[in-house]
Structure formats: C-alpha cells, structure tokens
Length: 401
Image (cartoon, rainbow, N blue to C red; front, side, top):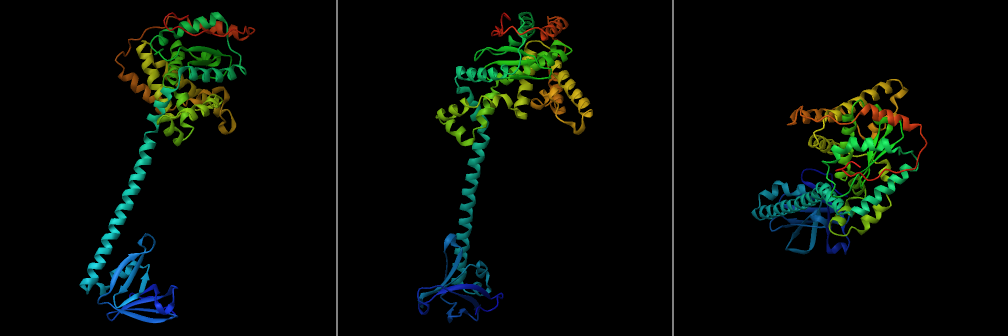
C-alpha cells in the first residue's frame, strides 16, 4: 500500500517490466540519495545520481523520473512540488534538469497567456469595433430599401391610429418645422411629418424619414420651441440611422462582421422581416445622447432656441412624477409613453444645459414665425372632425410645402 504522504513522499505511478504493460499506482519517496517507488506490486529504487527528469503527459502535467541503468523503468508524479525537494539542489545535474523544466514551464505559461491575451484582444477589438462596423453597414443599406422598411412600419402604425390629415393643420406644422428642416441634411432622404391623434406625450422617427408627433404632445407644449426641440431630437434619430443601427446590432456580432466583410445578403434578408421591431424598439442611452446632441446642433444652426428641448423634457419629467404619485405602485403611464422610449433623465437635461451655456449664440435666437396658439386651436378642432383619408406629402425643406 502507498505510504502516508510526507514532505519526502509523493503520490506516483510507475511502468516496470515486472508489471507488464500496465501502469501501477503507488508512492514515491526521496530519501538517502534514492528515489524509491512503493506499490502493492512491489518496490524498486533509483539512485539520485544520474537520475533524469523530464515533463510529459497531457499539457506536461506529469514529472517523469528515469535512470539510464534502468532503461525500461520510469516513475511519474503529477505533484510538481517534487522539483523543490532539497535532494535535487544537492546534485548539479539534477539542478540543471530542474531549472530546464522550470524554464520550459515558464515559457509554456508565457505562450499560453500570450495566446489567451491575443484571443481576448481580438474578441475585444471586434467588440469595440462593433459600433463603427454597424455605422458603416447602415450607410451601405440602399436608401430605397431603408425607406421601404420605414414605410412598411408606418403603415402598420397608421392602420391602428388615426392620422390628422387636415390640410390647414398640416401646413401650419410644415411652416413650424421649415427653419429646422432647412438645416437638416436632405441628401439621403426627405422627411415626412405626420400628426397622430393620440393623447400621449410621444413622438417617434422611422428609417427613411417618417417622423410622427402625437397630438397630445403638440397640445401639451407651451411654445413652438418645445415642439421643435422634440422634432430636432427625432430628426437626429433618422439622420444618424438609429433605427437601422439598432436592427443591425440585434442580428449578432457574427452576422455584423460577415456583412462588414462584404456579404450583406443574409443580413438584409433578416432585416426585411423585422419591420415590426421598429414599432417597439427603445434606443440605447448612447443613441439618445447622440440624438440630443445633434438635435441641439440642428436647432442652433437654425437659430432656434434649444431651451425648448430642455423645458419639454423637464415638463414631462415633472408630470410623470406627479401622476405616479397618484397611482399605486408607480405604474408606467401610457399617457407619458414618450418617456419609456426617450427617458428624460436629469443627466441628459444637465448635458443640454451645458451645451446651451457653451453655445456661441447665447441669446441670439430667431423667434418662430408661427402663431402657436392658433395652430393648437386648429389641431383641437380637427380632433373631432371626420378623417378625410388624406396623407401628408413629402416636405420640401426649402419651400415648406
């Protein structure tokens, strides 16, 4: 039986001609200048002088002890602590062998850690390159395809909601948006503005240029600048292709890399079946922050006061808190659904305040040339009017018609 483990004794195995081809388990004892193996099958010993040490087995996990005087015999142990035995330090040959083994183990570890670091670096590199790849892929999507996707999604929306199609109301909305649209790039697609009859404080944008504002939001605004602040934010979602980029991100990293390297066929096929995703998507914080910043720049370029964006976000935040206090459990409020997809956090509003403080225009903003109260009255009147089934036309940013 194996002897009890001590500082000189190690669990081991051995191959010996007397044991046939099988491996025998036992214990190895280093003492008195001898390496002694003991097992149920018997006992034999090697002198330490002339002993050869090497690594072997899977991943070099075993230490083999052999002696030239016993060519067909070997002892092995998985306990690498044997290399630190004092007897090995007293023999120069064993010391050199032990040092070679330690260097080999060190090199193996360095190679393993190096390969692992390269693998982690490669994965991290691809992951951090994901957003740039997604942006590049989105820009390669044919504009007609993007518009068709957005139109399909909006058709599903308009089938469930009434659109305000009063020409007078639509003209006033177009006039209100005209200075803002004049500074928004129109090279990829024009914009179509819609008003949806819905009491919720909401607005949304779809790929290809469809932008819808709920009647509840238009009627809750105190100034045209508040509406334009929301509109600037939504237009930025379109120009930055946040809808498309969200869909592309959702297909997985492998498909993104494959599409980036040139084969976008499969990706477009997947996206073509995901128009319903656009109806329920929530943009990431980065996308919302990006839309805030770009919307602010659009307003600034149009000489429109960006404070309207801030004041309307603050208005919705206060209203949400007030209404949550009136409901048990603070349920999410359908009437304030804009906040579920466009969270008006204090951090975002503080960021916009900082942008406003740094704005070179400061107070040099142009007054909006629209009778906003008259527009709201016309909108209220149209809410009870029968639907005329007329769809708004594409907006020409130059003429506003």
